[in-house]
Image (cartoon, rainbow over all chains, first blue to last red; front, side, top):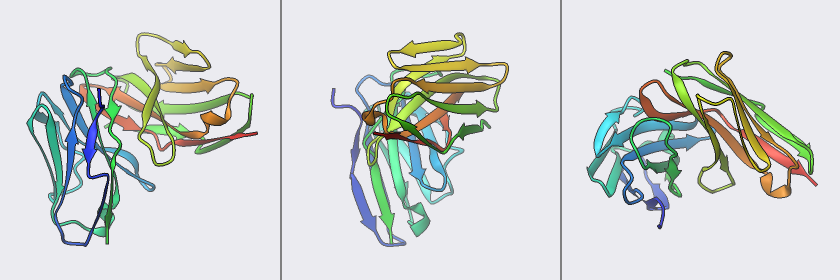
Length: 115
Length: 112
């Protein structure tokens, strides 16, 4: 299995631009998570989906952030408009089952720099 | 919501010695506690996890203990090796929520 796939791996954009991050979970996994990692705030959960349905988006910082999962093999995280404070590494993770106590497998991350 | 505290933030040990990293959590409903290792520029990778129905779990040189009463869990690495150098994160999950709440991380440095 190829593992969780994320694209792009690196993104540099100017403030005010729209940014779209993409994730392909491991085939057969039912849960998908978006996390953000910064030096100041560490690893934070942004949103997660079970069976393609958003369950908890309380970690999404503000309305500039949105996430979708149109099918079981694809999810996007969009930031519009982007700001310098959005600079971070964004990880997507998937899990083989819904509910707690299941291992989460992380993708390689997308390093976002907003200038 | 859940809050996870992790200590120390940096830990330096001599190669061959043991390392211990401690975490506390706030939500008594949490029932799953994974530990992740992250090397520089890489993704977090699960190294061991423990569920609330057991108090201890061991995998070769790595062990995790859980004290539900005190809401405290720890990672123990014995016979440390240079390749153990990395940032280690504890996390907690449960109470009806599937997302992980992470500690701030411990930078483990193995001195040759």
